Each structure stands twice: as structure tokens, then as C-alpha cells.
Length: 254
Length: 254
Image 1: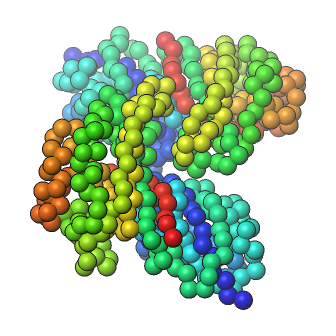
Image 2 (image 1 turned 180 degrees about the horizontal axis):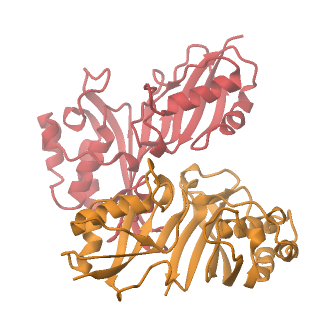
Image 3 (image 1 turned 90 degrees about the vertical axis):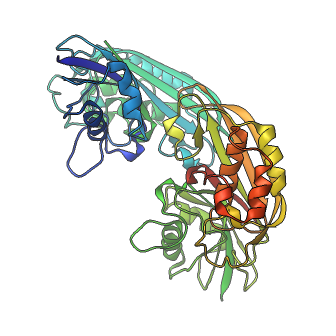
């Protein structure tokens, strides 16, 4: 009997060339698909809610697949996790026929992690955006609230993403928190976490939002410039694209 | 005028095939040597105090080199660090002619990091030995003190290291500490740190010592079995080799 399964998956993106299968490189879709095909005893095609880029991590990617296979759904996580070192299936549940992880997603939450210290902690380079000084939280918040809502986010994307003829998107919340944390050598780093929740995102949109907020937080641009960038619909008026390694797909909403 | 320079270097070993130059792979000696050759304007040959293995990290590797070059010694760290992402020169000082980072080393300190949690934190897999349960500290200490002193450590090495005809070594201290730390997802992991200080070490010696102490700490062998293993001089009687990613060369003593 055909079954449809939804999995929650985490992965360390640093050794993957992103989510999507590409010839000749190691991708999450490929590695996870091969493991599931072994576990299920037949070729499995995976649908991921988000096509995360090279170096981007996931704490809660959503992945669905359908097929006729013997293994009970609740045994899938352990069976798959025995086969992969840097990705893990956290949960698997049966979902109704026709459910699709990407098309049925109602929203996503991304977490972006920044670590500031006078000397960079090279052991964190694939997992944080390393800055020398900590960005100002209230300035970042002042800029962030200008991006919450439904707008044409043309200025905050890299052209080239699939299905992005319509450039209007809705961001429902941007939350910023800061705290002191310990670095690899027992020193202190100032961590800034930016959480961006929205209905859908375009290519590099979260990373450009974060890059822009970082520039505001470091004082190299004014919070108001974010509204000007948004209204201009011109990528040149937004900030830089923050590095991939700081980005984590945290949750997909259905 | 010929100068001799000693540097303190840290590196994240996860993207290096160890310290020593080998054809066709990326090693620290090679990458750091090429960067220094550019900075110094001539080919530089590096002497590292420890030939760390693939995946092993350094917080304080000692590296010396000699040559006739223009750049002032104090400017070397910044110039080199601009060229490499996952290794850093922390300090550089002039040393007397003939000083050699490896031959003149009087001792070394290694740090070994273990993180225990019911579910593995895949983001730490290259930086900690991931266990499901925390090893017992007092049992580990009971075993560790049996290894402090001057012994034939034949049972605690992998054969094949260079210059290991004499298998007597002196361990001056083994310290074990435990504490709670935060994992990538805001959960708690129990961290165990094992610090091994000695005059010199053989191939895989620290990792076999730690693997053996972990087995004692998890209750699968008795503390006293460590003395029996030592006296047997037989590798089969010691524990497993702990993974490379948990090991950090912390300091070299002169």
C-alpha cells in the first residue's frame, strides 16, 4: 500500500553542497535519498521544504516522500541515522496522500547566528558569522521592524531563484537576541541570534536581510535606509549577503 | 641576515589531512608553508613540534622556520592570517639560531574533549567525542593515575610511528574535568575534558589512553586493568583509539 511520510531532518551543511541533487557533488537530498532507498528497499524521491544552499544548516528541515515499503514509519529515523554521520532524521510520521513538504508549507523560520569577538574563533567559522565587534541590538531591531509585513522584496534577493516572478513576500516576525557565550578556547564571544519567520523566501533573502541588519547594527548604515532599499526594489540598495555558515533552517510550518 | 622564528599556531583539523606534507592532499604544513613563503618572499620549510594526524586540532602547535626575509617577525601573524581561513598564527618571536620546534620541545599538553548527551549533536562531531552517556570521572581518575610516570607504553600506541624504537615515555600529569555545556540546539551536554601532559608521545598514544579511560569511565573495564595493559606491553590489552576530532594539541613546552 502506498504511504506518504513527512520527516523532520537536521544537518550540518558544512560538508554538503546544499540540499538539491547536483551531479558530481555531495548534497543532502542525494545522501539522505540514498540512505532512505536502502532502508525502504527501493528508490525514494525526496521533497524538501527548503532548497538550502551550500553551507547552510538545518535544525528542522521538512522532507516528504511517498512509496510502498515495508519498514514501519517509526523505525525510519534510527535506520537512516545509522547510515549518515552529518544529517539526522529527528522524526517521521505518516501524512495524507498528496501531502508535499514544499508545496504545503505555510511558513518557515530561519535562525541566523553571529559571534563577535576581537579575535575570530576559527573553530566556529562554518557555524557562525564571525564579526570583530558586536552589532547594536536596538538599531538592528529598529531596522528589522521595517521589514516585517508584506512587501516586494526585490531588493533583498539574488536573482536566479526558481519560481520568483512574483517578488512579493510576507515576513511575519524578526526577533533579535544577544547573550554572552563561551568560545572554543574558554574565552567569551558575544552571540547575536536573528530569527526570521515568513510565509516564503526568495533566493538568499534571509542572508541579505541579515547582512543589511548587521550593517545597521555596526553603524555603517541607518535603520531608515532599509525602507528606502525596500521601496527602490534595487538589490544594490540593500546590504551584503551574510555568509551561508551562519544560517539554520529552524522550522517549517504546516 | 638569517633569522630563526618560532610561531604558535592554532588550526581546525577537520579540513586538513593532518600536519605533515603529503602529495595530493591538503595539510597544515603545506598550507601554512605556502602562506609563509608568500609573506616572506621565498620558499619556507616548516618544522612542527607535533605531526598531528588527520582531523586532530591544535590550539597551540609550535612551528619554527629559518630564512633570510624582509618582513618583521611581529608582522608575520597578521600577514599569514589574511591568507588562511582555518589556521591562525597566534604569535611569532625570534629564537636563537639552531632552535628547532620539534627537537627542542621539552613536553606537550594535549586536550581531549568528550560530549555526552542522549542524542548526538551532529554539529559537534568533528570537535568532540560524542557519547550517549557521561563517563564516571572518579573511575577515570583512578585509572589515569596508573598511567602517570615513566613506563614502556607499547600497549598504548599504534605501531608505525617514526622513531619509536624506544617505547619508554614519561607522562607527567593527566587531569580530568567535567561540566555542563550548551549544545547547538540549546540543550545540555555533559562535557568531559581530559588533559594529558607528557615529555613525548608515540603514534595515537593520547587517543588510546583516552579510549581506555572512557571504557573505564563507562564501566566496561576496571581501573586496575590499565596497569595490567601497561605491563603486558600488548596493544590488544588497552582500550580503543578515541576519535581524532576530540583531540587538541594545546601547548608545547620549551
